[in-house]
Length: 342
Image 1 (spheres, rainbow, N blue to C red):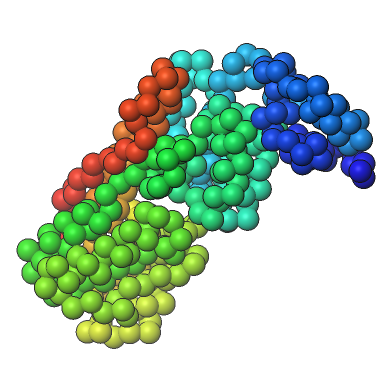
Image 2 (cartoon, helix red, strand yellow; image 1 turned 120 degrees about the horizontal axis):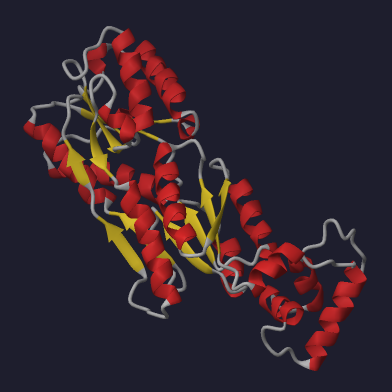
């Protein structure tokens, strides 16, 4: 067995070397469950060989019932996630829990690394907002004893808990409203669809058009990778590039935009190009963050209640702590808030 620098050895390395789970290592170190003598000898040998020093902070937290919630969000600067997380932390702090928040900046590689790093903290709960291609890491955390809660994301895994929105019905309602307002051609500006919620909106958009008697045009769906970050700026730049490439008569007269921040950038680009919103182009966004009510014009938006999302995460945690099994998947309601942008 090859030794490693103790600065880089984690409980996961010890578990792999001993051929046991991270949970078994935790039981051995903390005395929280009986470990067979043969297994204990293998663990001790692995610890000695790797020069492993237990994370005393994590061990101390575990002995204090480890009321730790680790939260992963796509981006700390996004108002949607900030509001939901602040709601959760306000509630859980009063109930004796502590939250550690991490941003993975829409990077699958970074998300995986963060999830793997959580083994040393041994949290009670891991809450992942959105996330993608992370099944292996989530499975390992679950097997180590963490409860997994997926926020703004659906899951068929019965070991996890999930909270999501009904995006398909919401976008159908949006298209029906735009039809009633006599818009002739509807387009979609969207972030890349690797997240479940964005994929649902994109797929639902095509069905909503067909259900309402519109023609679906692939060229009316606009997406670019950089729309995930710096949403206002990149939404503005992307809309400018669209306007520079296409004539006004070749563009939709209404746009559904998958976030408020993107919509704000889009509206600025339209205004600077001499377009009137909603006169020349109606805009509908998703999220309904606080900014939606302070733009010019004020944004018509699908409201996804971020406070309710944070409260629902805590509801699941509370139910688990009370050893109740009723909750596995929660679908939150959405409302179309009518304002002046369409």
